[in-house]
Amino acid sequence: MTSGSVYLDHNASTPVDEMVIDRVVAAMRELPGNPSAIDHPDGAAAAAAIEGAREHIAKGIGARPADIVFVSGATEANNLAIKGVVASPRRTEHRRVITVATEHPSVLEATQHAISAEDVIVLSVDAHGRIDLDQLEAELRKGAALVSCMAANNETGVRHPLSEIGYLCERYGALFHSDLTQLTAYEKIDVQDTNIHLASLSGHKMYGPKGIGVLYCRRRRPHVALEPSIRGGGQERGLRSGTLNTAGIVGLGAAFELRQSRLGDADNIKDLRDMLERRLVEETGAWVNGDRASRIPNSLNLSIPSVEPFALMRRLTEQITFSSSSACSTQSVEDSHVLEAMFGAGTERTKNAFRLGLGYGTTEEQIERTAELFIQAVADIRQGRVGSAA
Image (tube, rainbow, N blue to C red; front, top):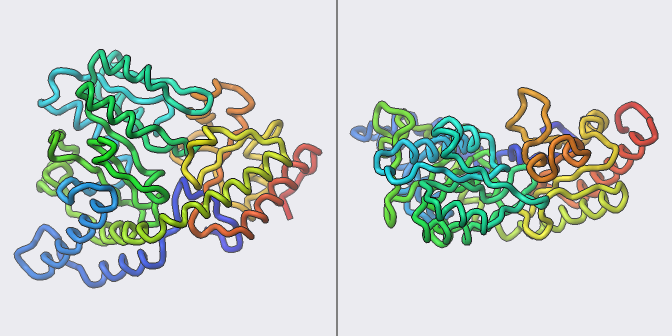
């Protein structure tokens, strides 16, 4: 992050915690062996470190270590979950996949490429970003192999009702996959209690390293059968062959250790988020995008009337790091598909949306500074003044 700037893009990527960095560096120095080569001490030591991390991660989400499959990140996990279920020879009764219009592109695109269009059901959301459980149940009655619905939206922070969705999936015999990426760092989750069969996690959204993630894949009651995404050496139960990223996995395990002690501080982040929200709503007329009663504590998505987000970014680029839209759509400048699903295409609310993502390192002083900078920038833009903020 830029020295002296306020970093408010934690939804896109979190800073790696110093303790995690120390563990990663130590693993790179001290664990040179291939973890598949357990017939010699160096390989066995690397394998033991991986299994230790697997245990920490499993405990953190209420799973068993045998359910944890290491992958490169949540995008790969989403693809493995969706394509793996659809391609599995054990899922012969139904092929339909139900998902939501506001899902991450890695879910929407994986679904579109896995099966024919008529077998993909994309649920709409209301203006608060919420799904209709009655609509979900109506589609489940027709039969489905899989429901894929994220725990919390990456742009608005809106939570979906995981327990209710899990109950409906169990009732109608569908598997339930959830992308937990945005939720994991800030809220508790138990995949058993919520009846989640498949779940995706990413290290760099929870103060761990980039390039490492997890697919939780339940092995009992019911056993989830997947077709492998990468074939070769048979690593990770044959679902994802290839030499494991020992240092990255150790770092992810360390991030889960750190998470346990930090979850109690999430209310402080919420208080800071609400403080910033109040200032910007009251003094700029900003609209809050998403269900204000059910959001993860760090997320704030706003639209300011007559103020384009890129104008704000140009003025504040040296002072505040934030996002005008999802960081996973960087190849072209397009309106957010999440906001379009909520408000329609081409609306002022959709075009003017931007996201502020707080984190555990965010301070009250930074929030006060951010509010002042935004309020001044909005006033300058509305009055036609040019140039960056002082």
